[in-house]
Amino acid sequence: MLLVLEYPKCSTCKKALGWLKENGVEFEDRHIVEQNPTVEELTEWYHKSGLELKKFFNTSGNLYKELGLKDKLPSMSDQEKLELLATNGMLVKRPLVVGDDFVLVGFKPEQWEKLKA
Figure (cartoon, rainbow, N blue to C red):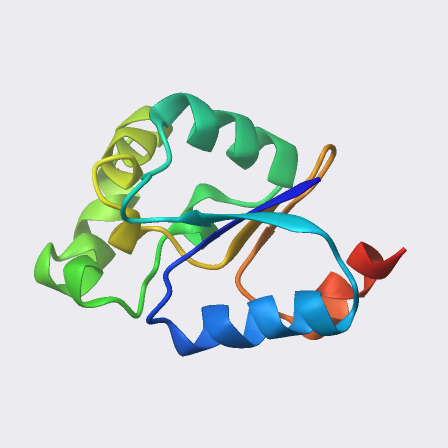
């Protein structure tokens, strides 16, 4: 079963959940702010994703901008970035889809096609 971390007020998350339902994909829904991902979860998902860690940050979010992370991230270690992400779900790019052997960050329907299988 897929785990989908999302924020209910996020329009992209709403579209993504709608897409999953329309395509008959079963998933477990998790509110990314009420149940913020832990450092351990984020570390596992980051390694499973094959993506650079910056992709896990919600770069268009207000908190990202308020904290000036555009300038701070380049000098931070991966561990520091993971610990920062674990402090607040609003820093994490969403929706975040976690499967047995993959992680999808953000909603790109063409990447999500494999979920229908």
